[in-house]
Amino acid sequence: YSITYDLKFWLHNYDRYPEKRDKVMTNAWYALQRAGINLPLPVREVYHHEEGASEQALRRREHLARMTTDLRTAEILDVLNDMELAVLVERVHARLYGVGDLLVRQGDPGETLFILRSGRVRVDVRNKNSATITVNRLGPGECFGEMALMTGEPRGASVIAEEDTEVLVVSKDDLAPLLRNNAKLPERLGEMLNLRREMNRLALERQQADELPNDETISYPKLVDRIRQFFGLGREES
Image (cartoon, rainbow, N blue to C red; front, top):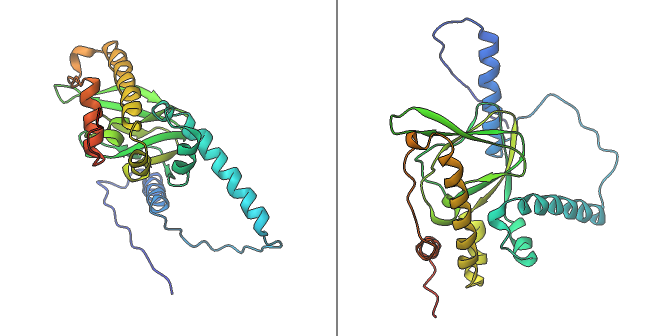
């Protein structure tokens, strides 16, 4: 059986219709890819060789090794030891975004961290006058969304793909088993998160700080408490 999709969109005029249609179809393709839906193509694939168990295992090890290397580029995950990282890499997944796609929107709820594997994104913030200011651009090896991942805090900025972009996504559910098994991990993550927030604050102060919304100041102990509360962990006994 098959499924036929009807995609409708409206134009104010038909100026540059082929270009606009291509943009709509491209965005639809990326959205379907992120949803795990593959469109059948009129091509013929011929396989002359079937992978054995050892080859499949080798390919999987190479895939996990690349994923582990990419996870290591996120400073917030530096506090994880090799065993913890090996558990995490089995749970994360990759997503693709096309030019102009919105990865996250300022003010929306979230609980995921994004690590850029390829491409480039723009970070926009609405100021006190509701004007949009571009505060940063990120490329491969950089990440965003650590506060959403660790505390469930609403997104502090909108992030838009400026190129075809691939990211690794780390969710709250991916990280939760590690925190449940290591009572010291919230403190380690809280310390790194506190450092990241301070670095981001200093960077924003250099970019029209008077026009940007005020960032809430959170002490390190309060930050750790928010991490524990968000992940449903009790307070550590002293």
